[in-house]
Length: 271
Image 1 (cartoon, helix red, strand yellow):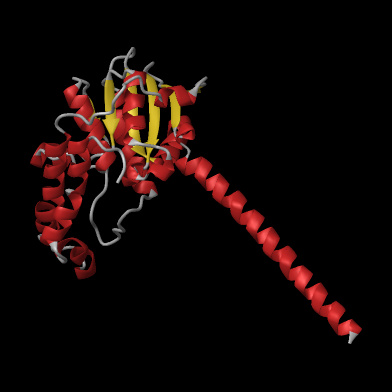
Image 2: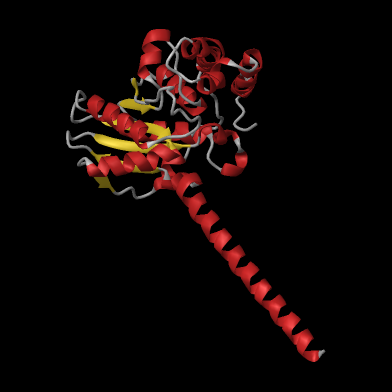
């Protein structure tokens, strides 16, 4: 009987040890992931290009900036723009759809940055790339996409003066992919002494750019009604790929996207 009790106690202790180790590992992994992808101070970098430009790279979190628990707001992003004082800003948006439809088709944070730059007379260049094909997966990136984003950045840098200060703004996933490509292609990483200072704001009250509502409404309309037609007319696409864009309640999607306009009009940072 005593041996059975000791055996059960030993097994219980082993289980508790295993659970404790698993908990510690989970905390460590979550800490590493948070520090890499959610800690804003690790999502800003500075480089000198082979052409002599000063280039800042900023990683963003798209719609997650409206979650106050992330501690990385739209005010933080605009503060970086103000503190870097760029001569030109590159954003995660596709140039061809701006040229053809006049729409800024990037994520919500790009719409706010684009609006601020327009209001502040800062030139904006669009460097994103993705297509809907039979390998398309939503809300993901891949090597080809980041290769093309880098190619767009590189091509635009080649026609910009050497003394230009450039700010590239893209999603956090692209941040690390572009960082690797920058180093692989001769850009020299520069030390940033106080990263947190770039996110600091001197404004007493936060206000969204004046034109952001109109820009976002146009983007929402484009993806609700125009882009489904473009995808639907592509005869090379599988039905399952097309259906991601052509089916569903388009009015509901459009109205859901407009939730951000209420935040804009009330100058609210968080949902």
